[in-house]
Length: 189
Image (tube, rainbow, N blue to C red):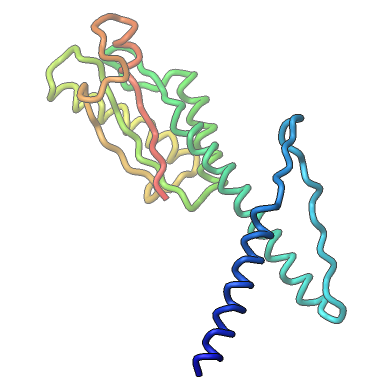
């Protein structure tokens, strides 16, 4: 019994030593020319299993396409939400530039029916809180009505007024006030 135990320990010690020597003697290649580009590995389908390989490859391609689409949609969402419409002082009527932006937003919403939009009305700091909340609501409703007239269902849109509470520019001058008289658009999935 003791002899078997010694043999097992010697064999185990020998195996561990050999493993240690193999890994410690390996040399790491140092490249001075920057990262190497490895050619893509093409795996040939196993013989007789081409249908399974084709299905697996089709699934892989579908996953890659979905990933590319999700990257693309994230960029589109950022662009959609970054483009606001502006209003004149104490007005809620849409300017021609605002109408052009809303036409683009309506087209995007038609092409992406899985999204809804929240129209957020904002004002500058001049006027009372109550007046600015009402004006922000009228501004949001102007955009809502225009998008609805362009075929976007009312069930896919909501409005909210923040009045003067969320300024885009906190300064107290005409440049800042003109930035704050706006509608913002937030997508909801």
